[in-house]
Image (cartoon, rainbow, N blue to C red):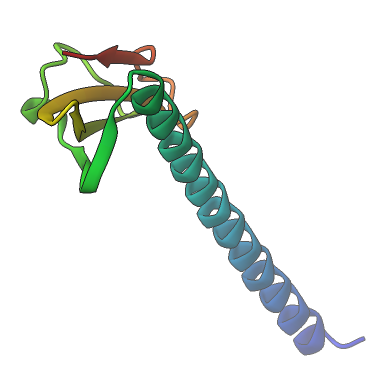
Length: 109
């Protein structure tokens, strides 16, 4: 095999590996987000609440009541109703993606 062909094979292999790695990261992040939504729905339902449409949003750490948060955390603001009254809950999740993170925590009214 000549050196030009070897070079092309190496480049194509590298690009295919990079695409595979990127796709794996995307799938992992999507499944983590789905896992967080399942946890949020379960906790609010267990408290007797119903999440309003569009009531779950990810917010920056400085807009939340949590004193600390790391790069490995996502903070969710959850608007829900219970017995006809509106409430807001906060959830700091663990993304499993960074060493810099705080433990999972809920702030419920």
